[in-house]
Image (cartoon, rainbow, N blue to C red; front, side, top):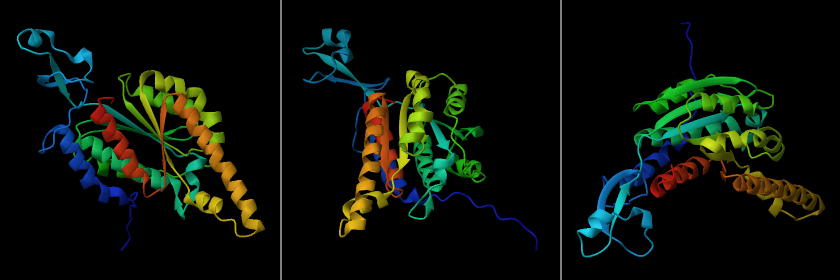
Length: 282
C-alpha cells in the first residue's frame, strides 16, 4: 500500500528527564527539600543570617520583630527560553558517526521539555543563511511539537547568517530571555559570523552557547605511540587550544559555553538551566 513515513529527530536524552524533573520539584517546593532562589516571587520571611543580601531585608517586618528579618523568594516561573538551532555547514559534521544537527536537536528537546514543565515559555528559531523555522511553544506537548518542527530540517552547506537569526530572536519579543545557541564551537565560524552580532543578544538576554564536542580530539591528543601519532596529537592540541581560547573570549563577552560530547550535552545544558533557576538569574 502506498504511504509515507515521517522520521522525527531522536530524543535519546529523555532518560535524563526524570532526574532533572525531581530537582525541578525541589526548586519549586513540591518535595520535602526546599531551595529558595533570589527570584521575584515572594515566598516567606525569616531571620537574617550572615551572607544574606541586605537588599532583601524587610524593614517593616524587622521593626515588629526582635531581630532583622529578610524576605525569601521562590525561583521564577513564566520566564522565556529561546532555542536557536544552527543548521549551517557546521551542523553537517559527524561526531562518532552522528550528525551534529541530530545531537543538537536532542539537547534542544531535553531543555524544551524541562522548561515547559517549569512553567517557562519556549520559543524556537532554526536557520542558516535564512530562517528555516520559527515557533512559539506552550503546553505539555512541547517536546512533540518541537520534534515535528525539526523533522524537516537538514544541514545546509553554507555559512550561518547570525544577523538574520538574531533578528528573528528579537522579533519574538524584547522581554529578557535565556537564549540558547545550539551551534558548534568552531573558532572561525564563531569569530567571523557570531561575534559581530553577540552584543545585540547579550544586551537584552542571557546567552548560552551549547556545542557538541568531538571526543576524537582528546583521543588524538593523548595518543603518541609513534611519529605519525605525535604529529596527529600536535594538530589535535592546536585545535583544542583554539577552542579553549574561543570559549574564553565568549565568556569574557558574557556568553556561558556548555561544551560536551553528544551524550553529556543534553544533561549538562539542563543542569545549567536549573542552576540559573535556583540562583534567580533567569
